[in-house]
Image (cartoon, rainbow, N blue to C red; front, side):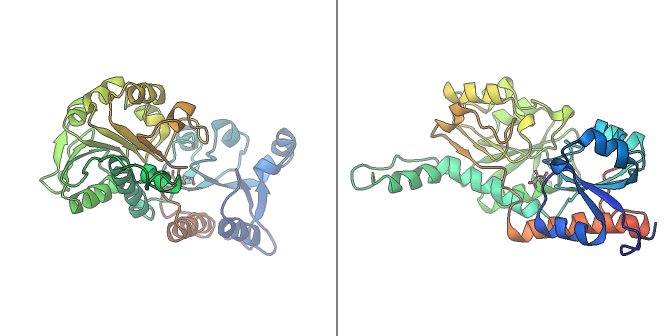
Length: 321
Ligand code: 8YV
């Protein structure tokens, strides 16, 4: 397990482009293979697949079963991001490959983004900015908007990020309710638990999606949930695009069956449906929730530490499986 970088570098495959801090570290201490730059990937797997012991990836680039199965000596996958729905966890488990993600360090930034979206969709700040820039202020009045303070915030998935959203919502005098598979007894007692998502949507002004992505939550937010949220309700998604049935969302917005949406994530990133681009009642962000200097540094440190820790001590710090 001990690695003597100078004489015997360990082969690590990077699935897609990663921040410079990570790439430089891997390049310095391991033998780095840039998967996305390899022209003949099949030939690489045949001739060098056996040498690869580590994968570095991200929630965006993931790791498929096929890739894992082509690397018979793979031991560890160190991924940037808390979400790991793009990594085939069953395949990793079956082959006893350790998978590590970067939980915790990004909670505040993701929760900040959820609150920013709540404020922006209801007060229409982005639209107001466009209004000023277009020189319209002198000629017309910007319409009145909706007050977010004191409203009802429904959190879909009260995990650690959900708790940070709830804390911030409370600072805006909002009531907090949540939907989880099970009620939590380690959260403030006044956070009202719903075992039914439709009922939570009915009782929410802002429905904030913070559940993990993947097959289990695919299209959890569907037509029925949107109808329950209703024409005065706003949908906020800082989780994964797949959690929301995007076609149903577009239709609900077009028909004004919900008031608006604040979205940091989409089903086919970086594609955003043209219909959404043409709407004023939505705020669209390019999956930036964790994208601050501070948080991306902390995420990069964790990616590096997980990788090094595996090859130095045989364990990762933040293990998924
Ligand atoms: C990242 C994310 O931007 O943590 C996550 O799950 O979605 C984001 O923080 C993404 O993983 C790409 O690295």
